[in-house]
Amino acid sequence: MAPAILRDEETPLVADNSPLQLQSPKSHTRDVHILSLAFLLIFLAYGAAQNLQSTLNTEQDLGTTSLGILYLSFTIFSLVASLVVRLLGSKKALLIGTTGYLCYVAANLKPNWYTLVPASLYLGFCASIIWVGQGTYLTSTARSHATDNKLHEGAVIGDFNGEFWAVFALHQFIGNLITFALLSDEQGGSTKGTTLLFVVFVCVMIFGAILMCFLCKRSVNSKGQNELSGEDAVECSSFKSLSRSLTGALTDVKMLLIIPLIAYSGLQQAFVWAEFTKYVVSPAIGVSGVGSTMAAYGAFDGICSLLAGRLTSGLTSITSIVSIGAFAQAVVLILLLLDFSIASGLPGTIYLLFLSALLGIGDGILMTQLNALIGMLFKHDTEGAFAQLKIWQSATIAIVFFLAPHISFQAMVVIMLASLCFSFCSFLWLALKVGKTSSPSTS
Image 1 (cartoon, rainbow, N blue to C red):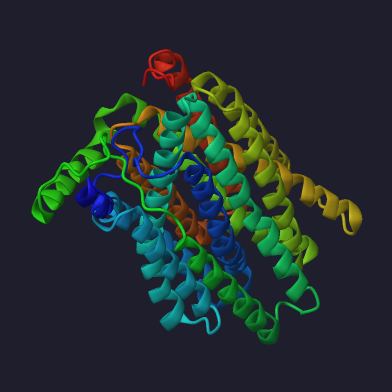
Image 2 (cartoon, rainbow, N blue to C red):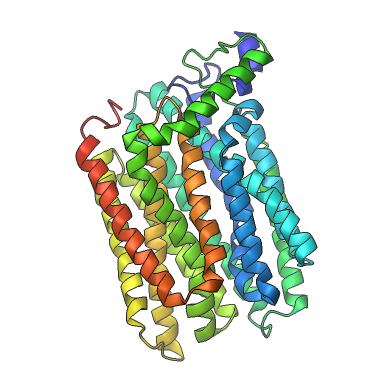
């Protein structure tokens, strides 16, 4: 048994729901707390920096272009992310992934084509492995906790995802409050103000990376043992599994029906980060207002993530919750299409906060429910399923950043609304077609 424990990080990340025998049940919830807090610290810096790219680095569209390159790189590396995570192990993947975010935020201390573009390329790789690692690590932790405590697996997966995404969503609230506090007195975001902001962010991210070191390693092989004999067998198995993961979306009806909603989840995030902040918030209340409105976005994102996670138990509950999130986002898009003039002063600020809150509600619901749904439906290749999640999300995000400078804001809103309708119909088809057979207890 001892050799298996030493080599646990070389086994497939999620194969079944049996835990490593030497871990106590309490370590499961402890790891969820650590993982959630570490991601909060890392992404409160990155998220705020990302929100500012389209407004601070405007020369030759450097900010928007760098984000487009980042998510294009993210998409490409997501194709092999499941293989990399299997070879590294989930904990090492999480640790290496943090370095990309640190480099990107540090590059904003001297933003130009020679710093931001290379940092964006490297972050694309790091983002692909950190998110596949996060999804598989959290799901395996939930399955182990459910097994050890004889709990309903679907409820535990929903609960753990609810906690993670609720804490994670606070990165928008805290990070943008810091942005608002440090830039509120700066006209247009002076060099001095932004330098201090990014120095603070780098320090916060270092603490997050250190915290990640305290995560437990986990083995999720069906018997808690390494079934492979030697590194060559591990590599061979990983390549075979990678091939299956990449072709799975073309043959699995469940994944095909989920992909449109996955793509929309990426589309709506990029819309908030780039289009909403640039064309709605900044013209009305200035660059410093980006911080306050995105703080409201993050606060509602976090609250709804927690509530949605607590209410999740299976496909039926997920369908109801996703319907609420889709409705919230549809309201915002329709209001933007109607092109109401935003009043100056307090009424205009309240209106923007209202739109931000609805967008946050939609994002919190989509992220929590998509991750819970994948954890429930794809037990035999969870890391591959989470890789698919990031491939389609990052691809649509990249498309938005590259496409946005060439089309009008109203055209983007129309695309968003059409995508929402199509993806929601596809999701409802999934619920009707495989709802009974893909419940947490039988899928």
